Length: 355
Image (cartoon, rainbow, N blue to C red):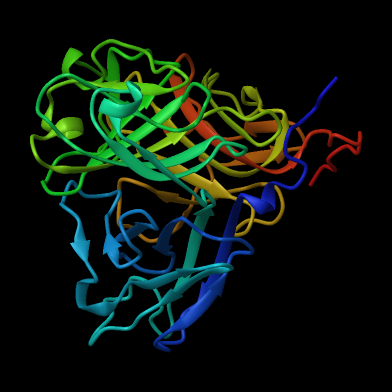
């Protein structure tokens, strides 16, 4: 029996934390060629910084806003990606986004180092061209394409079926769109809002992704005519990543969610009602249970500690211990994305230890 295909998740995903020092060109080490980084200041209200190697390190998106992409806003963002992480620049004021003296920060980092390019007319895969970076071992790709304003299919490069896709229109103030297999592909969520799941045929064409392409409708959110688009695509990888759902039970002994690994990162969102955010937890800001320090993808707020919004990271999954509506209301439905610290059992049959 194969327990995992990835024995060392730190080769593909890693959370890093640092204290700002205001030094221009400071390097942060993630431990691998970093292709996507998501940074948030913890101790103050500041934007999220989302950058990737496909768009270029200096191009910023913010998960809490519908705003279009910005290039190197006052220099206070990333300068470059490196073989071991990234470097940071300091502008005239920095705005505290990334390395302000006195700031504390967290960065979530993914690896997708293999270049990908698809000429749709030449390959007959997809109906429009796409390009980017992919890591088939880790089930992750970063895909750039230009919208047509008409139904289309886009090659994603994974070689397996994506379970979650996040899309942003880079040129226009359009909401971030999230597709998740647990909801079905006639529905979507918006990463920058607290909205419940919405139904629309012009997002994913009511069509599930395949191992080669995902479908997009005519909506400007995913397919603005002549607009540059970016998609982050994820597939389940045994022992490393999981994209699923669970039902809350409203109890301090919350629902156990099996992932097949000890989590390093968990993001959850209630999808059957409005008003609840995208709550993010990780193993570096909280190194032991309870895990109760959280940031919210749709909010620029500082890090908070929630007595009713906490969970345990277990050797094979996670369990919420609070009863907050953002994680564990009785009868409510939640989607999640999770990445591993360790597989539950390695390919050499070494089990993960409890925290």
